[in-house]
Image (cartoon, rainbow, N blue to C red; front, side, top):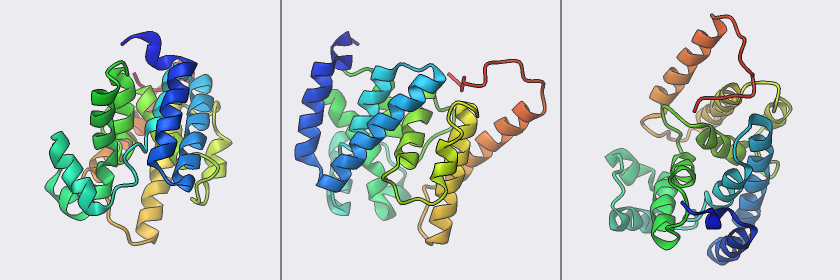
Length: 214
């Protein structure tokens, strides 16, 4: 990856393109996620430029309808779970965005594209940047989720992985309360990070709490 994708000039170019693609509310959300991702990156020692760009572009494909999202996933060759493709196609906007952005802006790094791809449903083995974008998407102040202010208050005090897991828990609780469907991999992701949390809790802590998992 060249440094060109991390410059202010590239960010402004991407921002203008994004504004043309999204409705006003979604665009403002994207700017807020970008700001929150920078705040998280600063707190946890992650490249702020990468967090800023991934946060900005995470919803690049968000405004497609269900049928359009299915067609786009097929056209771009997304390897989607059939249940998601059939019943929850809008969860594919992360993977399709990453593939489309890679094609349109090949200078964007794979780590930024991966964070964009993973922000919708999370995965086992998230990087620090992945967790930052996922968490920023949920806790940015324009979001209507209850309880996120308490998570924002823990930035820099809890580890990044603890912050991510708390966010993931809130998202699951919200989906259950609203009787909404979940990605089929949600249980696997939850179990993986709960087990890691227990492992960390059961051993002496000497590491910098700002660090997540690479």
